[in-house]
Amino acid sequence: MNLDAVQTFVLVVQHRSFAAAARARRLAPSSVSRAVGDLEDELGIRLFHRTTRTLSLTEAGERYLAQVAPLLDEFERAQNEARDTATKPRGLIRVAVPRPFAQMYFRQWLLRFLEAESGIEVELVLETRYTDLVSERIDVAIRLGHVRSLGLVAKKLCDMPRVVVASPARVAGASLKPEAMAAEPCLVFPHETFTGAWKFRDGRGVVREVHPKARVTAADGIFLRDLAVAGAGFALIPRWLCAEELMKGTLVDVFPRHDVTATEFDGAVWLVYPSRTYVPLKVRVFVDFVASLFKKGPPWERPAR
Image 1 (cartoon, helix red, strand yellow):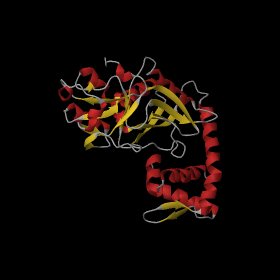
Image 2 (image 1 turned 135 degrees about the vertical axis):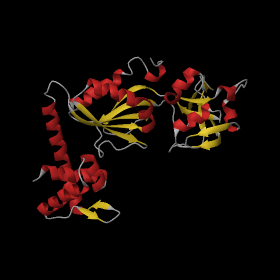
Image 3 (image 1 turned 30 degrees about the vertical axis):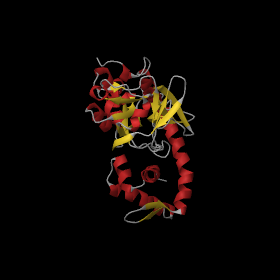
Image 4 (image 1 turned 180 degrees about the horizontal axis):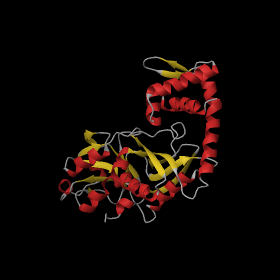
């Protein structure tokens, strides 16, 4: 049995296409197709239904996947344990990070990590929506908000408060209450669980909901932040997204005595990785490195040096 062909088959399933699997393995698509074809010939079964637009497992392919995927996991675990006997961590880790967070913070952190750990390579998955860590074979992910997935280890890095912000000119001389957001121009992020209301929780724990007057709706927090800086309206965004602007004074926290959210209160920044009996050294080193960045609080709340 050609182990490489079996691994290629599983990779095609995970990426849902021959071309994507080829890119992941840095091979020509024809090489991936040939490896799967040779495996089918060896097994005497067809593993995939193929059309010009779709790719799906046959019934025999589904049964074969159920048998070999756990074996490959055990093989990878054995490799990792053997590799970890070396004095330095090494190997490839796949890391998933929300795209805006990666652009603003993770890029700098990754440079420091690569400098410190010369034996580790990183494949970065920039997310617009959360991927399934197990099926996509992600080693570790940064998650923002709430973590509910079963079978995952979640390490909280810090709280993730949200704020309603606006330019100083927009709020100059105004004494605003949360209800004012129903009449003022607002810049709205359409979260998947957004019900149309912004929620405000005061110091007594009383929550009130206000339906903002949406002047602009866009699923891009950086874009909404920049519009707020330009004076276009009030934006409800995570504090990590606008900490620098708040420090510089180009944005103002409009309701500093309220907790605010468009979804759920008390979100956080998390490091998440699949629950395993054995966590590879390369993953442990990465987790420890990122966690160390938060020992003195959220990095974005500290002025850049």
